[in-house]
Image 1 (tube, helix red, strand yellow):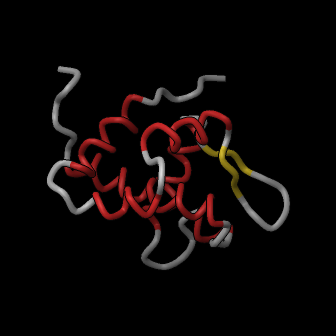
Image 2 (cartoon, rainbow, N blue to C red):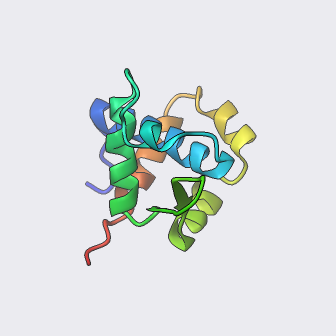
Length: 111
């Protein structure tokens, strides 16, 4: 059961989470984008909220609306490593599903 294939919805969420994690690292988006307030990017808001609940990113003061947590940096170090190499591999069969499973294993922080 631990290796069950992620649903289409879980894979789509993983793709949106990847976009958010990349944006957090590159400091390239507005707070409205992260919150899903940009037309056509509503799913980004859901992904941002999910990553916050999982403790991978957190709200930040200043020009960058979110930053990686220690847990988020560790997740990227183990799952993504180098963005350029990782992005190239995403087109391979099963790569996004593998990332979706890894993301699914990250438990939400309960405070």
